[in-house]
Length: 169
Length: 235
Image (cartoon, rainbow over all chains, first blue to last red; front, side, top):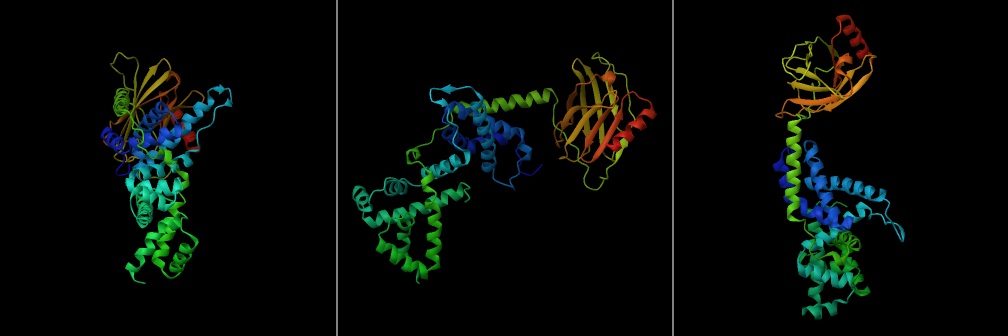
């Protein structure tokens, strides 16, 4: 058994405290339903508990391992859902968003939540809303150069947070 | 290029990465990048980040939903229940590993002690495997059940890791699987398995561990036993 394996209930409690919120947030985004998301998170930790002795921190982080388990759980739940004959007026229910795309989106959104408000704000206004820097500067009551430098430091902060989260491109 | 001379350029890099510079601004920044590896590296790194932005939905930058408080308790309770049930059934996972050294494909077959059991649970049979590597002990208790045979395996002195498959041989030499187990140091040293074969019809108990096979014949003559071992060897 590798050192650092999850072998007792306390290990699982600690893993839950550290990662449940992220896993749940992602599960809600991916499955679009808080009840299903709870089910997915519960199943993820049960599987982690059953397979705990196979977890090896030398190979990858606990977070990465848990997300890999969640991935399988979400796929299983998606299959189970698809297997149910839920034919609506439009025909067959739309399938869940492909997991990896959803995970990428969620990671960036989570990183955005973690950077400072000022940085997020200028990125949203200039990039997502496409507003001119001068207009944003006036609204914020700062020089235009400040908006530019916040965009720069905002992207840097985003990069750092993504790295901390274990994002690899 | 002096580093503080780059400060102005660096602060343009964010807008540059997002495609927000005017043509003139971009042209002069790119001229600078030509001659400044540090700024060029920073630009490339921010361009990589900027390429991720379209994947995010700005409507979702607000606080993420949090799991309900009772979810953690529910999971802890389920895991606790599972562990207790496991213990109750003594269904711990075991595994046998014999280390690389001892390991030629070998066959150890052996005698068996059928001891009469005093318990009222019926005719239990105690089985001991012999000719095991030194320090290793494998034994089993078999109990007839309505569904077949319940097998309590006892293992000692082995290293963890190797999957161990157990099955019983039926009257025609057919193998009836009893499942597998994996040894865990420090855990309870017994595992409970079951096979859908009547104990009275079983000819042998077989344990495959790593690349070794151990057979304990059940209630047969020595001769039958040898034959059995030859069959095992050829599988």
